[in-house]
Length: 103
Image (tube, rainbow, N blue to C red; front, side):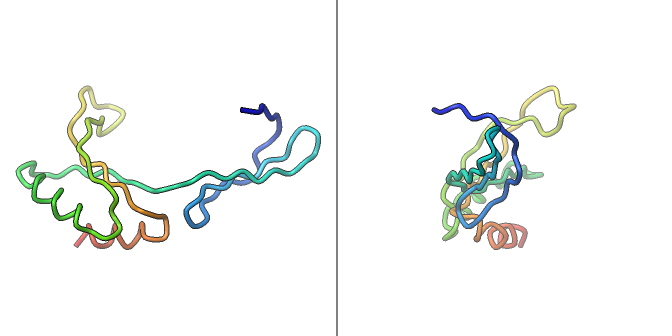
């Protein structure tokens, strides 16, 4: 991988890519891109509903994967708890998925 020295000018998501603009030490402007698929985490108040929720989420047309993962719920937490990691197919569908999940 090439090494580049310079300054980050801007970072944003465009469609299904993360875009980074940089200015190199020799004055060139670079546009770097990488694939981007958003995700979010959910913790249910009642763990008894986890299996039912996973099945419902997996049937959503814009959810690619749902998996249980151990995570700290805050910086002050001393132990990890199981949460659901929900991977969405694209940035343009992220808000719609969040809206559907909140219903």
